Length: 531
Image (tube, rainbow, N blue to C red):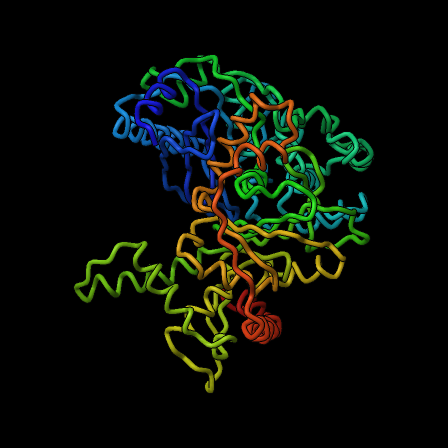
């Protein structure tokens, strides 16, 4: 990269900034607005959700402390690399974990703690809405959280004036605009593919359902939906101070619509066209398949959402991703430290991942369940991570690590089988997330789990914040279709690493998955017995 070009682009604001609130990290990514494949600087902040009163939450204080720290780290990174601290940007975009429930009254006071996508207390509301609407309403969707509060007669419902997602909330506070990208909106209330707005029929059905309750009409409570490329407001003076308390950042920067992490994952992998798909692996793991034709049946395992442009997408979302795998890696890292070895975290991951390649195709009879939280796809209201084996299993480090990696993809594979049975076809499947940084390992096992070729781009480990920065840069190119912009402008020179599943390993994973399915009764017993 030409350092003079980078310095001048940052100084003049020819940049795009992506901010993403992930489950365990808040990340910011600064790119060249005219060549978004070029990353100028990054910053991050680690954070964790809290389990308070049996609900998963993050405090709003943690939101702002975290994003300020991540932004401060990005500014320091730009200063270290190019000797300049950015005071403005060409565009900004905010992304966050989809779904959940952030509720406010007319005076903009938060009514209840943020209820994240991870909560599974909404089963009765989701079931009632699914029956009423005739479309699947997952437990984590915002409308399910709202309706559960109505069903439970929570006092705050009568004061409710507005509810939104995490990305929608942060965008609102930075710009003053209560808007949301269509992809993120599709995890609040179902979207009509024709209008690319909330489904008016479903909004009407919900108003009928809660008639007589002390709650305003649903349309009044929701943020306004915008497609990718639409102008979504500008950074206010108050917003600039929230993001950068030093006062260096100037107001006035244009914003693109806030999006969910599913949408940024699609953008980061160039998977927004029909018959493409992607898998995003983090605290949760989910697969997105852009549909060529609508599904014929309603499945509780399959969500219907959209791309950031509003095209229909089938989503298999698993609440539990790589967190349990990370716990096992941390265990081995501590062993290395206790034995006197100095090994950084990335090296521990790489060593253990490489070891998994020597494991047996079916993981030697071992089983790993990664369920830290409830998992609706397999009917678990709560999670109990388990490692299970029979006396005659082959208990080796290679098999242990292969079982852990298989376990990350286990529930996802069950959901994807349903989608395959529906006839949804894929030409390309892409993967992104930190666990794909060790080349050829997690990617290989994912290809085996899906029995489909999987590609990883060089930007895969950047993931969502980079995808959000690309959406911010797209503001200048909104006269071009998003698919064309990504293919012809962003990914034109991208390097893809493709893996084709090994037939013998496909058979081995199928044996693993059959044991995994059978052993779910053990998981259910653990939830009932271990409180």
